[in-house]
Amino acid sequence: MEMQKQFVESVRLYFKEEGEAWLQKLPGLITYCEEKWALQLKTPFFLSINYVAPAVREDGTELVVKISLPGGGFLDEWEALHLFNGEGMASLVEVDQEHRILLIEKLTPGYTLAELEDDEEACRIAAHVLKKLHHPAPENTRLPTTKAREDNLKAILSKNPNGLGPISKETLEQASRMFTCLHETSRDLRLLHGDFHHYNVLASRKDEWTAIDPKGLIGEREYDLIQFLLNKLPEEGKLPVIEKRVEIFTEELKLNKERLLLWGFCHTVLAASWTVDDHGSYDQSFFEVIEVFEKLLLLKGS
Image 1 (spheres, one colour):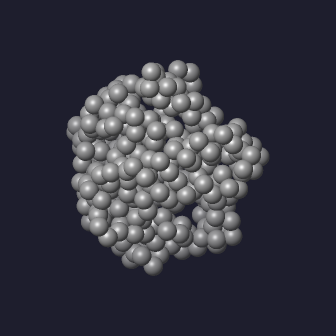
Image 2 (tube, rainbow, N blue to C red):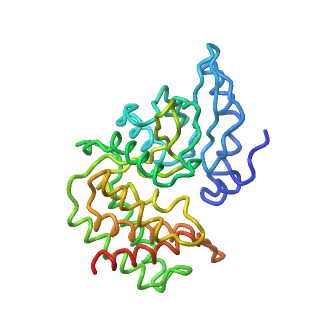
Image 3 (cartoon, rainbow, N blue to C red):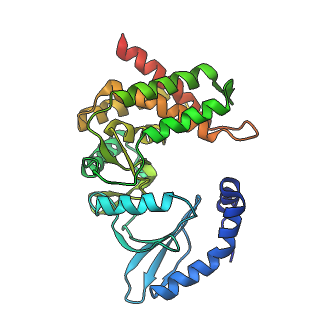
């Protein structure tokens, strides 16, 4: 079985021996899916760290099969799909907890929001989808809160007290303090997607759009916008693009602009930190957006 090179490298990089063992089991898991649910898996989508492929049942029903790596991510996604219950989100069809397999509704025609050329239209569509997703936070849930993201940044700072890659010690410390302040003043917690961006919003029917691949997170609505703000940016002139997106989302979703920018700074520092590898490489775009949020906060305060 030939697998995508980048997929294999990512699994080995992030999951080490456990990932290698899972890769060895993957062909058998694919066969297991086909036999258990009487379906045929097709060529997989572009893969990151889970195996995701379209499939067709014997009766012609089209589905998406997702075979997840070991870890808590599978359980979080399963619960998030259950809680969203198909409202603005692709529906969960079947689950096999033991083997960490999800069968999910296949969206047609399935092209992503990233394919729209009009960025302002894409933002308004995204806002419409989020209106369907952001239910009040459930009382009893295993889903993490955004406090887990703060804890993650504090762990990064503890491990890298002098800074990480291009991110200075002062920037890490400032983002950590800001995270704490935001959590101490958080109100109106909601069920969030947790990884909401252009590539996780698909065309599902004429004039309809639906989210996929929720991470599952509890927090303020403003936090769920940040990953969208970080994606599909031009190489030059990022500030006016993000500024316009913030304006649209604030208006469409009745958000607190200051908190949106503050969460934006915190999460962007964290997201940029995640991309720094042992060789010093990092996501240049994410790093540049840290300064964008700093400038927008100064403009907001002036």
